[in-house]
Image (cartoon, rainbow, N blue to C red; front, side, top):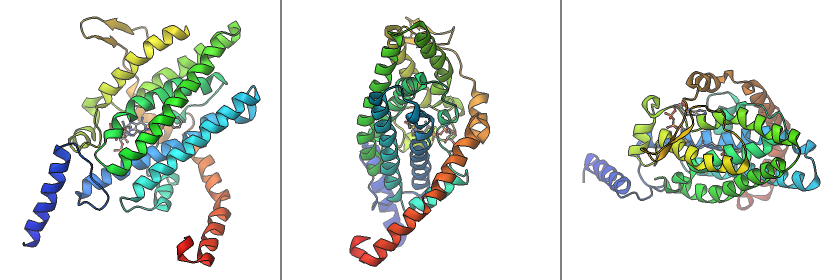
Length: 315
Ligand code: BYC
């Protein structure tokens, strides 16, 4: 076989795996653009989990009871775990975790826009669980069937934990809604602030999503941004009714003909600005992460020195 026909054979194998919705594995040949798209998306996802620890972590020291504190601590720790599964999945594509962390800290790689909004009350812990984790589940369940094996397998485990997170958020809000008028007001105010940023988590509309077409052709993404956003709205409206909160969108109504809810247009200029680094907390989130990374330097050095001392079998 000539080199060219060997390469054709590898490409045919890749195309056949994608066509039958099967998995590409780390040692399989893959087009460079497929690899770099995966690194971009998985890294962005991993960074989101790590930066996503901050808004809720803000409330650990001020949780209203020991029980709430234990729940919140466990949840925030889970997010760290998700980040680690995802960095590991990205490493199978030939990038190191050091490199990915450097790209986060220098602002070269992104993380989800939703974590650039402040958490102003304890109700935000519940709202993030309900809406932000709820949106994450909608987005991530189809990713369990993504075409890259290590990413799909990481997502299966993450989704199980995310659905638990979503329920804890909903349970917290249910408890607050059964409390005083001030507590109910806190929940409504929090939902008002997080509703639109949650819809923006799914990315720009399909017509202005530069990556969607290729990512869907490769089976990296299984469902489009708009379709997932619609799924999330349809899932959330009845939950809001049970909770007794109003979703802050005057255009939100059931459309019998479509069999879906119609809803208003998110402010796409706001999403672009937050992605560009101009959201209310972008600078604070990155500064905090850089400081934490610096403060953890001695732990990384000690672990490396220990591994070197113990020999390669302990590396
Ligand atoms: N925020 O062509 P598009 C969690 C970027 S964490 C920031 O549609 P794509 C949790 C996009 O990267 C949940 N950037 O892109 C953690 C692209 O820019 P580049 C995180 C955004 O990749 C802690 C450009 O805009 N989940 O669950 O096809 C506590 C054009 O967009 C955003 C994931 O990361 C955004 N919202 O689709 C609680 C899921 N939207 O990279 C909860 C995995 C778009 O070309 N990721 N951009 O410069 C995905 O599913 C996809 O990457 C997206 C975007 C749907 C987000």
